[in-house]
Image 1 (cartoon, rainbow, N blue to C red):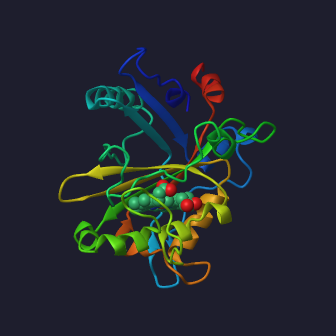
Image 2: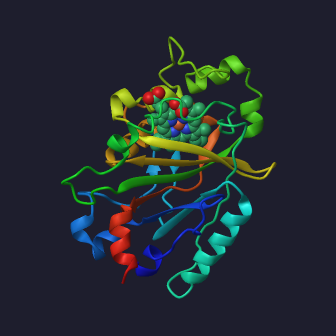
Length: 264
Ligand code: HEM
């Protein structure tokens, strides 16, 4: 844990790399139980809907998310991190992402419209003062493979019914279908989270890397259960065109907490 906590992004004021590190909840709680959010668990079992639709559990011990304005700095930093961690572990899975048409995911829809603003986000994403793990956050990472041909064969009006928003401007539909994605993940019902859908992959094999942060685990799991149809038998229609291939939860400690471990 000390080695992970000691990883640092390059010291530069421009063109740098942002580094987020997260730990398997059970690993973190074994070492720092007093700083673990109550009841937090990994993605330890596949989530299976009533029709057998499966969101696989592919939990690993540690996640590193590096982002930067250019791939070369991210590449170099990732290789340095892997080298630093060589004695304690190896890479179980790797994925690279890139922006698509400014702020769209690979469905072609605008991503993040209903995110809380950056001013509000800490309230929903960070563990509050007085709670174990203060200043940290709970992260859900899920890789979704897209059936691009099936999706692109739909007329835009049908795609809009599937998402529940308009494609050009991301306006919520007046009557959004119960199986639409935004109805299945409605934050008025489940609570707000802070998320980003990043395109990954090649021209022939690609999809979305879902990254969601929350101060509590429940909104994240509740959204997944509702997408799979576990609550009322209605499955998110987006899941007809996208298939989850990974799924894991991580505890992301505050920088203050990491600094303590990195000093060891
Ligand atoms: C293939 C994977 C996914 C794609 C392409 C996708 C795409 C989208 C799009 C286009 C929107 C509408 C614009 C916006 O508000 O961002 C949206 C909304 C949303 N998505 Fe997803 N999403 C995916 C997976 C997920 C997952 C796994 C979760 C939760 C665990 C999730 C949670 C949400 C939430 C909370 C909203 C806003 C709902 C509201 O209006 O309150 N999404 N997503």
